Image (cartoon, rainbow, N blue to C red; front, side, top):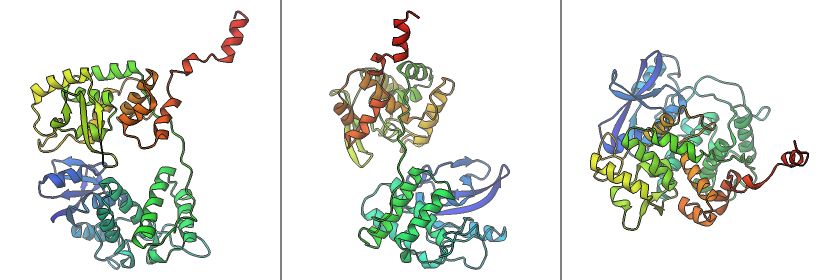
Length: 406
């Protein structure tokens, strides 16, 4: 395996972790999975701000494709007195060497205040490699792998020198209360953390029904963020760059996730059947989506100019597809000044596609098939934001005023 070297430095008044590695497609792809990475010409490397979570992101991104050399980073942290020289161990790849908050499990008080910076103790150093191995064998996605390892590492840092396998359901409950009350984690993050712990105790350790006694927080019911048809058109047609406009219009026209839109291959566009074949979409499922007549015309214009080979939308390296992050930035730029609903994102194009189909009378089960939803309940949430039926309902206030002639 190749080696990824982490070097600390100060850049623009900020402490950073530099990420150095040989130029290879698999490593370039891995580094782009890390949220917040940027390229610096000064140091000729990718980098992220120094922090525990960022280190864990790096470890998770490279966990199966490279070995991480963090000697220089650790030496720098010791010199800066961010971690003590004693207690440094041969860390597994996903272990953090950046100062975390170290609560300690006690009988008198569930968790103590912040302690001195620590690393994952050697008594638990084997856990992340064990989890990583089983996750790979079970064929889970890279995103799930990164999430599980990151969430589990938070618990291991919290435990200090207490063995994770000794925790009881009661102590796990107290830890989750701490995550909610002290760390302020939202419900979705808590669910991810519970899933990671459940995987370790039930899948790795084989403790059947270990989490039956542990309740899950109720998830908030969030309505999809939908863009009107007028705003969709106004924003998309204002994009002058042909490649950018094609990506956005294609995503909206077929209800694609950002990862699906950027990873379409040229051979997967079938103009004879007017379909696009999506390979290995979310949940490792293939599915067919409709190829719009408008998009077909646009794609032919795009193809003549860009002449893509394998990937329909190529990145800077023609052997790689366009990055999801770049596509998201395109969306932000296109809709920056259009007074959009709060927290709209690239995914709002998919929400808008489904809602507009529903408003135009498309059967909900067909929309479910196009979106690739396993459960019809997921698709039914679009009925809460459609104007199709709501526009026919008259407010009782309007009715009263109309009767009074006001």
